[in-house]
Image (cartoon, rainbow, N blue to C red; front, side):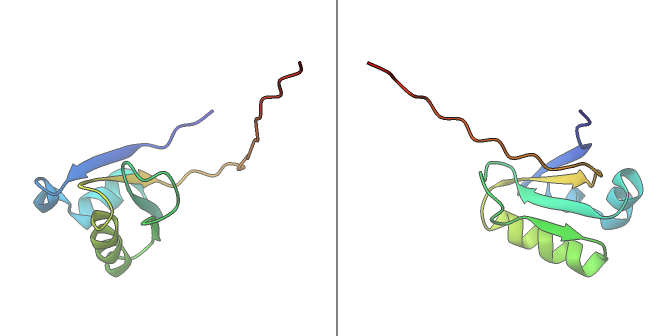
Length: 87
């Protein structure tokens, strides 16, 4: 299973977030998301500098740390688990 390459930034290191460098390193499109959010809230798929800058601001609304990830082509698989107790 392929794992997306990513970069992590915090509000303290926000000034090191440079669109051109990150796009060159990870390619486009990119995904920007809050690091500790457990859902799709605050997640942005970006292909332009304007979307990138907006995505950074949006992700920081939900967490002090964000991830910027490369996009990978893969199938999404949702799996449901539950436990049954028989007495």
